[in-house]
Image (cartoon, rainbow, N blue to C red):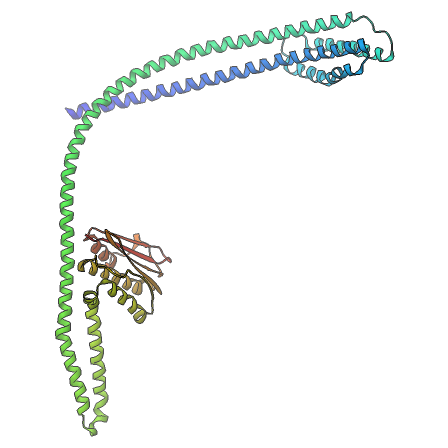
Length: 445
């Protein structure tokens, strides 16, 4: 029953969401359309304003030129003609612009207006020329009539432009009102849908809350069980590691006590035989006895090396620092590898089990560097802070892709398991041709 209500509520939510998205999209489109209308209206009004400015500019140029000519006619001072002379090219440009911007207007014939302006300019030019020759100037009634006619036609053009602007504003206002009504209706519908959706979502939230509480309770139980199992597995791994190390130590003691005693006794007997051989038999038997002595000496050396690998005596007697130094100093002798060390003076805060784990990790890293990476240089580092010991072994070997390493070799996995037994972190950084770095961090407590 609850599942059926949940499915129905989910479907209703999808319908409301799709409808709401459609309305929101419509509102967005309407808003964009309204904005575009406003921008278009502003652009058109700006164009109308520029046209009115052009008409006013032409009229101002004519008035300034007329005033300048009158001042010259009254005083004969050439300084008054400056405005008249500056206005000549500007009036030509203004007339050309009239033909471009006002060709479609019907209230005034632009060609006739151009003829009036040029006629007015001709009257002013003739008056200036006569005054310059010292002749009497005619009555300015013609110029006044022409100027009044120019003003009248410019006024009619201005009125037509203003009327066009008012029509644009009226049309735009009507479109704005329509868009506003549509937007208000869509907003009201969207609000109603939001209220319905809010109610549906609240019900879903209540259902989800109940489900989340059940899941949280179950997750807490599972996490508690996982933590318990993880701790058990960690303790088991630590126990297995410790048991293996104890067995290794027992085997090392037996090799040292039993095999060592046998080899030593055999070496002493071989030495005695070599000393007691008669002179007449030494030439025949002494080479074999000497070979036996060398073989026994090599066996004793191999036994000592195996015992040192199984349970390094320095680790037990002098601690992990000296054991790591001995491991680093043996590498050049056995494999020709140069080792750079960065070790602290003391590691009193590291207990014997963790010290053994750190040594085994370094030992395995050295073995991998010699056996697989063909490294010529190693760097061994141990850092100890207040909470953990951080061991790092870096080589300049051939490297590999950690994600593609062979699962048939368990050296790296063994190092990682040793670290995980103490809840630490283990990282391998490597790439083909770029060497390998092994970093192990083990908590001190």
